[in-house]
Figure 1 (cartoon, helix red, strand yellow):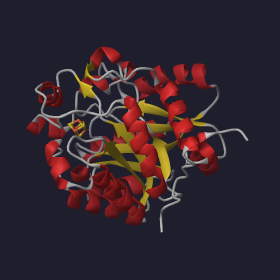
Figure 2 (cartoon, rainbow, N blue to C red):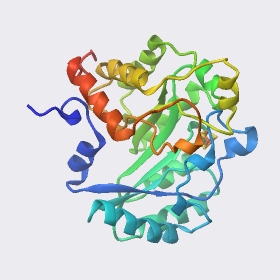
Figure 3 (cartoon, rainbow, N blue to C red):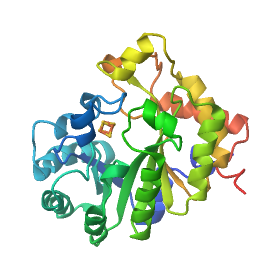
Figure 4 (spheres, rainbow, N blue to C red):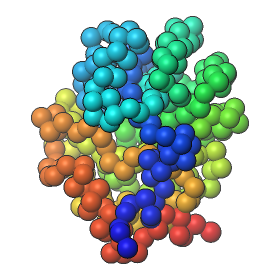
Length: 304
Ligand code: SF4
């Protein structure tokens, strides 16, 4: 039998097919509002905004211009797909509520956009923005930067929020009917396998969490993390170690939770300060698939 990842884990492409019944692609957009945490505190130690801003999102383009710029490229590469407007840069719920409303509405007014995905921090999830997001008559996913259940790790990363903040944000969004996704970093310096397992077990126990994005920690130039790791204070996972760790955690992740990412996306080699990350995402996915089959791993098989 053919060995496919989607036979062992709940992939995002499977979810999209089930949810929308057609091929769907996310078009990355930016509100253009810088992350307040970065402005106020210097930001998370791993964050370099240059690494997550696509060319078509920079340059102060408004939402229509960003869409006009991005959609032809998507159609060229992916064919005739429907689109989800994905506000992924910075903290996409930060800013004046009327400005945010206008930006989300501009994206949703495009005839090919059939849903909204908004990425943010737990401490920028408030009643006003949740009310706005849940007022749209299309599927809306909110992605919350959770990273870990351990406050010591959140402090290490200078996240500027606690796990309690994350729990509250998840609950508020879940109760409002938004589809809740969380971002996790696997391999935060100082975290053991047991620490990561505790995070995964928490996710499986939270009924509001429907999607997870896994990230391997990437050390970019010009970040505090690069300084810290260069001094020998900590180390990060290379890809083989990350794959093994992630694969061993998957049985503890509830089977109905969509895995919408398995590796940090769009790593630009010229921006990396530390680590080799040999190969590319296709190769890593292939390695992960082989490891999963070799070790007979199935998402959710250890959830009781
Ligand atoms: S919350 Fe996101 S955008 Fe803001 S500093 Fe942290 S990683 Fe960067």
